[in-house]
Image 1 (cartoon, one colour):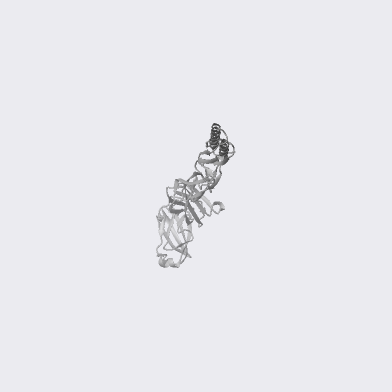
Image 2: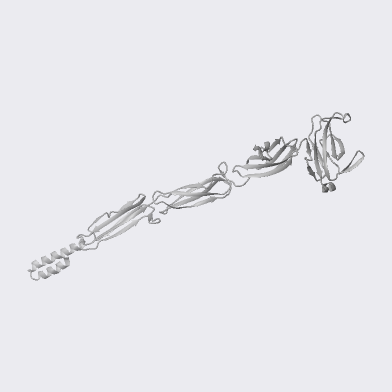
Length: 384
């Protein structure tokens, strides 16, 4: 029976009672009505007030303070304010309340997921460095993460393709399910610019050659290879180092050789130049079996103790014999020998050199220095 109904009945009953007793009965009913308004008949309501930073997918990324605002209740359970500070995959808080006579109750609960910690990120290049820790062409970098609470949602990838620097860096990140972002960098040394190589020359000697070159300052080493190689090999490396010249000997007279000079920088970039030549013996120029394009210059190696040299030119028979104190002789376009006039005409020529000792009139010659051949083409003979 409600207090209001009780007051009405008391009022009806009071009409048949003595007045003092009726007043007392109505006052008691009124007091009971007031008491009931304070806790016995009010509706209970619970309102949840949350303070914290919302992340993604229902997660919080900060401490969370939970307040339960309860109205119309005479008693409650679990409704004290609480602050959650630890990362958690899920913690449930509940609040329940009721009015005085239990005619109205309410309860609420909420599960809170908290992840305040960004993922730990690692960077992994797609390949190893090219040389001594340096990269010399673009490299891709993948980023991966670990996250103990909400888990990793996605990671970025990147690549580096320049500029050249010893302090390059590639940045990337991973995002966890809660929305926290962790970052990382991959540091590297990068040089994609090859060195420069210039003035590669070859000077032939008696079964040998001297090679020379000029390389840029960033060159760390130079490699020289030869085809054909030594001892029947297709290719041989005849030099490796940081000098600007090298020598190769033991060559076969008349054999063609192909030398490749390669400059290598700190990152493994290379620059190469190739030079070809025909190995000579004591007779240096024209090289064996050369095809001359002008009047030939005959050059040979000096002989120790020789005072002069005899040069003979043969085509079918001897067509020239001259003496010179030098180790070279330029053939004229025409000359006279043995009363016959000769001109440089197309064909194959052979030439020989002997060293001479003492006076020329003594005609004391040493062993034949060497013999070689060359060819004169039609155009060369006409314009030589």
